[in-house]
Image 1 (cartoon, helix red, strand yellow):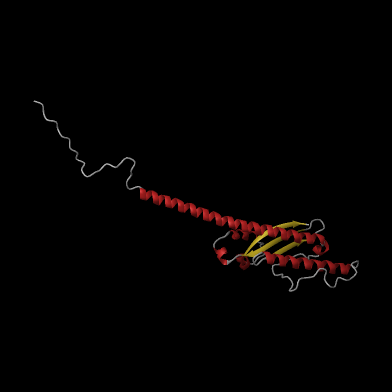
Image 2: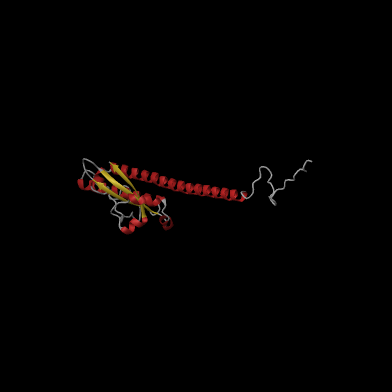
Length: 206
């Protein structure tokens, strides 16, 4: 006599099969990972934008400084006699006149064929050139200043020009791009000035 069919029972009670294509417990993790990746990307873009602005400002200052130095060098080339007398050298402590120096000075109505009068004319013209150069630097750079070292020589006339400027204390403390200009400052700066000035350097041959 045939045996009745056996009934199969499952010991896995309480577990329901998930519909095809559905996952449980992973959606929240995926959202958190996506938010983290987006945040990192936004921070990177913000940092890149800040660096771009800083580089653009430095480039702009460099172009302005180059134009000012080229103009000053052209004035020195025209007035070689004044240059050879050291009248185009500028120290950090030098300042422009309270009133702009006129060109030519009022006392240049003398005979230019006289050697003493030639010196007066050359020095007066150089004083006017230095005055205009310092005014331009201090108008175009934040708390700008200049140092010029000249080497008068019949064989080779050249000069070293440093343009100096100050940045807000917050920018200096944050390690901004302007701190990289400190390596261009002359060694003659005092320790106090080295903390506050950034510099750009130009070597000009006449």
